[in-house]
Image (tube, rainbow, N blue to C red):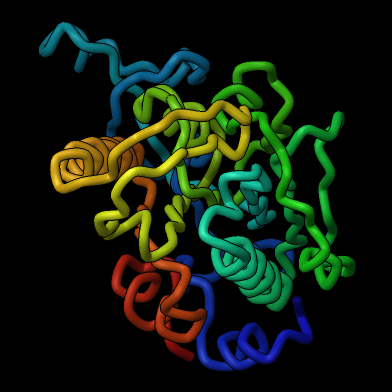
Length: 285
């Protein structure tokens, strides 16, 4: 993907929206947002199971009867983990969604490599262990089969997703699977310095139209159902989709993560300008 024309053009125009201020240490190190060992207090957030109990603020607990941890500003090496949903649902509507997902992963990896951030792309599919693609091999992402059946929450729940502490973590998925957004986002954000969540849909998934009588096939389970895709069905779908997007966005805010909705057919250039820059994931060079 490094040699993909769209990726190359975007890489020339944008940089990662990470903190600009350098800190003492190795080249490429940046300031992170996590509970670290520095003495510079930053803010509070609600306690998440797995947090270091040494950072619990008991005075805040006494005032509110809720557990909070104190966050400190610390120095990190911005290792970049890109979690790419390689399940079969990423092929719904043809290849446009999977192709755009690979280009997004390639762009983030390229920009991270320019910072010396040691990026890798973890393919979320049915292989065990999951395949981690180093930056030097990301041109091979275009050959990803996107035929997995396991979902991101299942993989996390089985501890199959290696997530390194203090990494910059970027997740690219359609999130079109059964899950609890609160639990999933908390797990993803728990030990990361930065979490960015990109929900990538195709145009029909984002704004469906009437299809009449159709047999729908679940790309991951193979289950079939006969359904009349009429206005009523579409309205119910939109309510569920809106609720899902609202819950993901709300839980991202709670964990200081960034969330972006991206429509695959727009193309990488428009996604960068219209969707990723406004939320702060990218900024123009």
